[in-house]
Each structure stands twice: as structure tokens, then as C-alpha cells.
Image: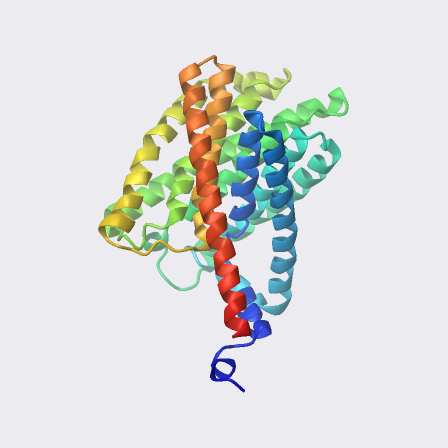
Length: 354
């Protein structure tokens, strides 16, 4: 028996360890891939868009299986994650990922599959929306919370807005469902918007009171921009919905916020990029693959989609141009992070075989 065989864990052992440590927010992979697919379809790159949509759907299926396995084999670990303020809200990536894929399915004509997926996402959103905050704020894990508040909390807002985006794109089977659809869409958008404000206050308080080190500035802070960008897309979708009482009552307010949200998201773009330079170039924090890097891909893609949609709806060529440039950056980011994932998987396989 070789020395490496005696010191390196076998593939099943490494796989079990990986399953036990599976990040709650890994569905950001599906979110990032799906939103880049949507953006590519908006600029006419249909073949590439379809390929990424298929990849996003397959990744979602694989991750769903892995999460179920983790629940059956490492239930205590998952419960502990649900009480950990630093990672618990990553579970909302499940909702956002399902909604992003559902929107992609709407684009290619799979309306029934989209409705089913949105129904599943809505059910999970309702459950997690009450269970996770209770676990984090009330049950707790015994440690202070404010000092551990981070960008992953914004995923709660993103999940709500993603549901609004998916619902706004549905065509009700009968007029009787139009009122209900309008109510649910405006509700999801409103909840996501209010959550964003509350979470932003908490994150700012954390930074003011406790500061933030280069290592603590993790990729999930980019979700702050992505949450605003998806609010723009959801708001534009609501503004374009058929006139029903709830939509008509909120159309003016929502329409007025869309441009404000986009402007604030644009303002955050160089701020977050500069913070990344501060983290990696100045303070030499190693840039290596971690699952949370998908939390950069999604905001980049979401901002591009928001810019494209806003520019076209409001006839703003400059904003649409920003969207095209943003989409190029999002595609490059997706390629880089996907390459990092593949290299990590290959190293793991080689290490196990060695």
C-alpha cells in the first residue's frame, strides 16, 4: 500500500465530509448560472442561453438531491446551520434559484413547468420566511448576533423579489386568478423591499460598531447590489402587469422606485469592486474558489438584466448600454468561478485516488 493511500482519505470518506459541510447557500450556483442565461437571451444569444439554462436546471437537481441526503445523514449539522447568523439565510438561495430557473423556463415556453416550480418556491419561501428568522433570532446558537450579521442576510430579500419576478411573468388561466396573482406579486415585492431596508440597517450597524476586516468582507456582500437590481426587474414586471386592483393601487409607487433602486445599485458597483481590491490586492487575502463566489456572479448578472430591461422599457440607450457591458462582466465572472469549481472538483478526485 502506498504512503499516499494510507494518508489520503478514500473517495467515499471525502464525499461524506463534503456532504456534511455542504454550504447552505450553494444554490447561488443555480442563481448565477440562471441569471446569466436570462441576460444572454435578452441580447439574442439564444443557444448559449439555452445551454446555461440546462446547466442551471441540472445543477439544481443535483443540489436538491445532495441537500436531501444531507438532511437524512447530517440533520444535526443542518439544524446548527439554521441557527448560525453567518450562514443560515443562505438557505433562501433555494427559493431564488427555483424562481430564476422558472423565469428561464417562461422564456423558452415551458409555462406549466414554470408554474409548478414557482409553486414549490412559494411554499419554501413561506416556510423559511418564518422558520429561519425564528431560529436565528429566537432559538439562536448562544453567540451574539449583530457582530455576525453579513451580506448573506440580503438573500432573504432576493428570494422575495425573485418570487415577485416569477409571478409577474405568469399569464393567469382565467381572469378570476388575475386578482390573486396581482396581490401575491405585489406582496412579494413589498416584503422584499422592506426586508432590504431592515437588513441594510443591521449590516451598517454591524460595520459601524464592530468594523470589518478584509477577511470578513466575503463575496456575499455583493448580494446588497443584487437585491436592489432584482427589485428593479420585479418592479418593472409589476408595472407591466394587467390592470387589477392591487397592481393599480401600487403601480405609481413601484414605478417611481425602480429608477431610484437602479441608481443606488449602480452606485454600489464601484464601491463593492473597490472593497474587493482592498481585500485581495492590498491585504493579500488569497483569491481561491469558495461556494460564496457565486454570490458575486448573481448580482453582476442581475444588474445587467435590470439595466437591459430598464433601458428598453424607459427608452434609455445609455442604461441599456450599461446593461450590455455589465452582461459581459457577468459572463466573464461566471466562466472564472465555474473554472474554479471544476478545478476544485478535479483536485478532490485526484487527491482521493492518490
